[in-house]
Length: 196
Image 1 (spheres, helix red, strand yellow):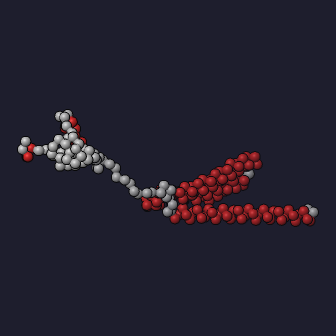
Image 2 (image 1 turned 30 degrees about the vertical axis):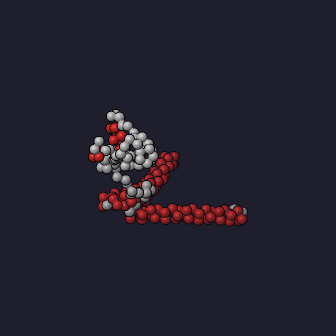
Image 3 (image 1 turned 180 degrees about the vertical axis):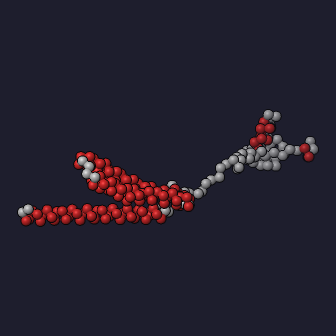
């Protein structure tokens, strides 16, 4: 056998690499015999297998943006507030003012006219009760419209002014009620002290 045909092999026992015969030079381990079916398997095992990578274009890009769910609607509304929104908010505020101030005045005038015309007391009492209920409902509707404008159109100046007007009216109403109650109690005490 010529020197060029000598096949070198690696010892599986000690790892010596330059073995030329049927036995390992270092440890004497016998050269393993490869069958025809095992040779391709060994060759296949020796070939490094690259990991399969997915298509980078198919993978969704991570979204690192964060939006606070509580402030997002308000910010979006502030950005979208334009002339059309301002016009709608102003119309709703005018309707609210009408319901709060104009409609009660109209109801009061109707009751005064009916009283002057000399309507029957029972009929006048029923009409007064109906109109009084209407006045209360109109004031509640006015407050509801103002709250709607303040929620939907936060940047509306008219809505802010209207809110402070209604808050001032509520404070004045509470003060008036307290003053009237104190006055009534004082008058009743004076009457009791003087024996009236």
